[in-house]
Image 1: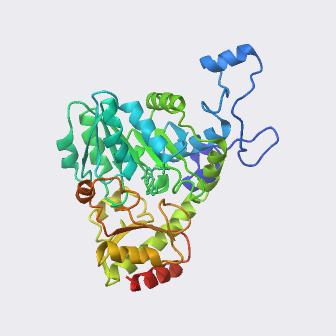
Image 2: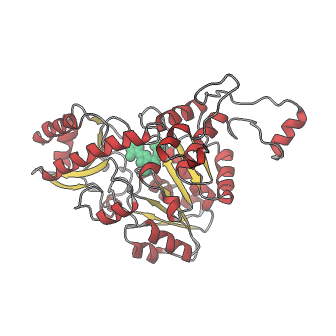
Image 3: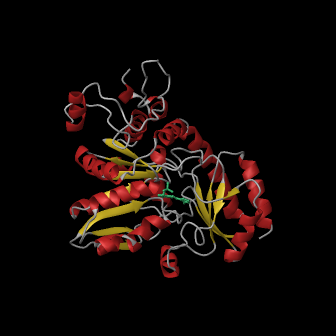
Length: 393
Ligand code: LCS
């Protein structure tokens, strides 16, 4: 049986996979910074690319490559580049595609720092950007300039759960020769494969669903074709954005249970979203599995499931939301997402606090918005916990 013919769930377990000379059943951790050459000539051949071989861990390492090949396979891409964090993945894309005089368009409700660095740091290097409501294709179209090089999307977006139509975004970008990148962190390749829609690059914060156990920080970039992969690889390796072999091992291990973790988390999330929607003290709930989500139909068409991220607002705004966060006992009051434990946080004062009040308002990140990352605990326990906290709001 050819490994390329196996299903997604089997790939989670068996894709990549290196057996060493001792016959290890799982890919070992090659915790080494450098690799011995058999001869000076062999070293030279490795450097010239005449012969494939490991040189130095920043440039490549078997444990890291196993993870990269697996995620690239799951995303239906050409190749993957694992990075030290999700932000290192974001910067690999920005630095590869944008330079003096270039322009990027993105969604106004991105993960805070993905937008923050574009507004604070990249203008120093002559890069311009515009942030629009990318759930409306016409807003993206209106923002296109002759120097627009990159359309950078996050769908569903953090934390407003807005969904961008990938098919329409690709059509528009292709018409204007714009490269497209999707941050697929909220879905993972289990629920959405942007490259299948014609997107050029996908990235993840592996800190989240891919690793799934809230015990590492990591990222990955996957390119659809070889030419783009090589360009990204040059930047990733030379900027030193690489992941460590031990982190890569943990991410690969966590990835094995991606499908069953997400199945359980989104089953829980659906029940919790319905509970919240019916709770009188809750003003509104945003969850792609609810018919009340403004892009419900698109989510059903584009994603293979609604995921495990919910945003909601309690009547009484920020003060009421804080009461809920201060009173949960099972859910963990912490940023990040995509782990097996339920997390609760307040984007306006935490993950998105660096955005200006105006930018937050336009993006729909209200002061009262509370974000939940639903875990795989018993759903009755999560609901019981939220219920007792909401009663205090
Ligand atoms: N992209 C998305 C969609 C994210 O949610 C995050 C982190 C990143 C990129 C950056 O990844 P990192 O460097 O942290 O691995 N999101 C976080 C959040 O919502 N709370 O804490 C971190």
